[in-house]
Picture: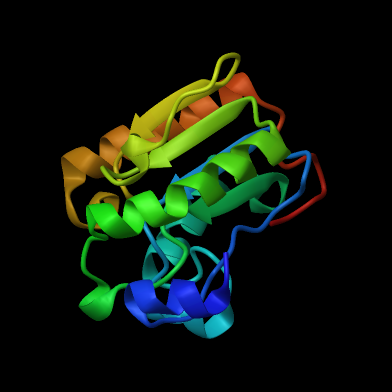
Amino acid sequence: MSEERSQEITGSEIVLGEGPDDAEVMLIGQNPGREEARQKKPFVGRSGRYLNSVLTKHNIDRKKLYITSVVKQTTPRNRKPTQQEINYWMSYLISEIRRIKPKVVFLMGEVAWKTPRFENIYYVETYHPAAAMRFPKARQRFEMDIQKIKAQAKVTVTEGNGL
């Protein structure tokens, strides 16, 4: 895909996934926000800071996770991506899943729930961190779902290591 063509979709910079190529867990969000576009890293803005706090609380090492989004560009006024934008980027997301071969895919929010399912991968559909920050019921569910990651994969911080 050419960068010129991708710029036609939303007119913003591309933010690709990051994390180890052998990650057992892949976290998938909706699309990057302004701070993610500025740093060219996924989940580093307000939602990312909240996600980090929940991971830390549950002793999960973010460095062991592969973190990405369905849509790889910001959207105007950070609106929910359109179906056209989702369709445009879905093949790239599928290639990320095939390359990483995670044991667990943690789908954060309605856009991420549209991710195709592959055999031999455990999927967890949960709220997006932005919703979990705002709504107590969503927060409870999000934290319960984070525990499922620990039950399915080796992602915890070992003694003496910090996040």
